[in-house]
Length: 349
Image (cartoon, rainbow, N blue to C red; front, side):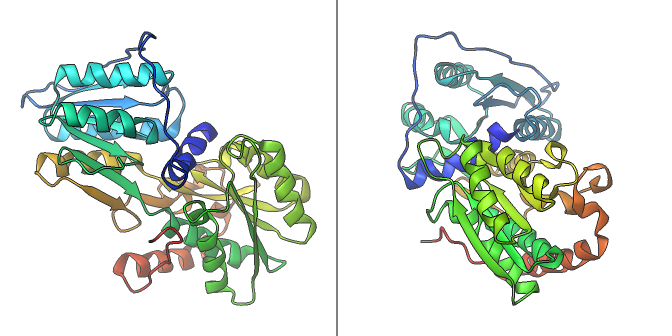
């Protein structure tokens, strides 16, 4: 789960820092293909994941999305689970060889591979979720997320719940892309409690996406100054943030999926990405001939909080005990959805 968070946050790094995922051709791809619909319409969809799905909630949602799309269109569907960079490339090739109506891929790992395949196979439709190719192709659609909208709502929760009046964030890197996970958190807190003091600490170092120790150290710096609500945007280092907050009786916020189960009583809520929504709606758009890049936020149901989803009572999230706070957050969400309230995007050009 946290590994998926690392990969998701690295999407921004791949764009901002021009990081290219490595590929190889000499390893056997892991082919965990599964048919899940009758395919009566003759249409077919194939999903390729960057990692094994297993208990990865982020990828499980993507699988649900392609299955729902198959049911909706009476189509057949397959899922190819990759295990490394070599199998990612080979699974994409296998998908292209099968010539489905839409090939869906999740993650920045596939950006370069799809760019190559799209040029070679102009009639094949591709949908990349949570990333996009650098170059525009007529047969490549992208589904990206407006994370900053959800982060703003989490910040509002923090502002309403903070007893010290100090709300902070531990972010991976000090870049506009990653500030999507920290700047709106501060803005949301100040929107509901104007005198809130805010601060962001960055993990940095040699392995900013995997350094739980450095993330914990940055969290402790904030905690030592009285910050009692911390946005954990440290990718795999979120565990370190949760540990630090728990030890001091403070609270933290997770990303991408429900991370409350990792630290019950400490994690208040999570900014979640509904990859199932992006996959299902993305396939629908491609079939309708509407290709290009589509952004999913609160309005489209692509971004949400665990506290705003069904089942919050059993989520193990602290926010479940604060229905009054959730009521106010729902009001803010509705304002964003209606367009009455616009959340500034730190990564906007």
